[in-house]
Length: 204
Image 1 (cartoon, rainbow, N blue to C red):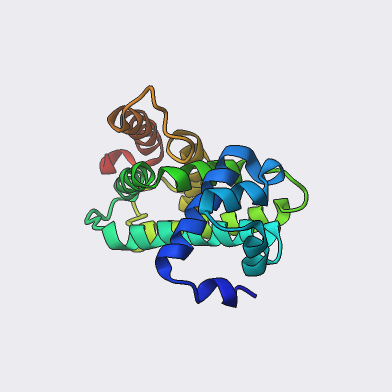
Image 2 (image 1 turned 90 degrees about the vertical axis):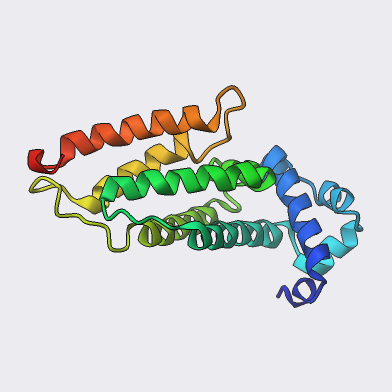
């Protein structure tokens, strides 16, 4: 379906993707217009439809591409040596903040995607976000030591809780009023609170 777009030179594809992310990120799915995307990308509206057929196809493609960029960055930068469950999560959060600071348009886009509730795309969006979060969690926690948890604590449930929390502290828009160090300090304090309450005493 996207063959005509995928054969374009990488630079041109990147320009269109970046433009579309900026427009969708600022306006959301429903209020983003293909004419604005075309103008931002320096192409005609007809070409947008020539490459993607419809706005929905473009939107879902952007989500998949953003997920791939995030995953490639995680795999390239993930040099976490600690086996500790919570140390892994803290290091992953640092990586995510670094990626967000280097890809502001993508960050704004993914934030708008997270809160998107238009019925035309909501079901597909939830499925893509859930899949992406699951894959990243596997990458981050592969080989992590889960033996320190108190009896009866499910590490997968703990991870789900942290993922939801992360979307608010690390996963949303970067707060221009706070530095990355300040954001990480808040996140680390919350993760350590979980560590201190969910680990066996002898493992603290």
